[in-house]
Length: 321
Image (cartoon, rainbow, N blue to C red):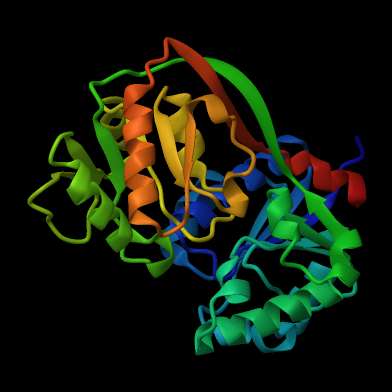
């Protein structure tokens, strides 16, 4: 494989999921022997990565402004030498849902679905810049097929799907009907709906909430700081409950399924990939439907079942450069 010179634009990427996704792509592209320049704006997320790469001459880091409203405009955030360096590369990949125009080949990763489905001032502005990048980029990166449906039809021929789903066999985790879910203060995660449903269910079944925004007396409230701690808590349960209206991937569902849990999830575009023998689909925002599906999950006893493994194939984009 011919060695490529790539710019990875991580400006504005600071959510845990976004940083994790970027680091995985960065590591794969570096390990593949490519020369990589990273543009970043958040010290606390990228200083460690930068320090780990000091002795690697194939990696270069450029710190840019944190002012997100300037990130779509290359001349406002870079000097002339930086622009020349960026455009001397074979391609640039924008990880923050939108980027700036360049003369070299460009890719934009669309990871945030909310600007397309929820209207408020912030999302209207974000949608404008995302659509601007979709139009100007050579290629649009999405993780799974349902995300390509939010893109205007005229640009879908530019879409590259990097998400890959594999089937595997797992041992079912039967823990006496125990239920687990995640706390959140993000409206899209539908936390209050989950609380309403599980307060009904908790009269007969133990319920654990991981990292709730506030204590709920009816539930076992547990706070975790690492992925390993979170997975260990989930392993103590039999059923994972999820209620988001929209998801780019819905990674916790895949993780729960691979731990042997049965999953109870709403009928939405992001759940259409799941194998049905240990997946229970309820009508979105319907309390009665959700309660019934949880009961159905508790009544089903499995020794073994199918699960889906989700991964991203970042090497795929090298084929387009």
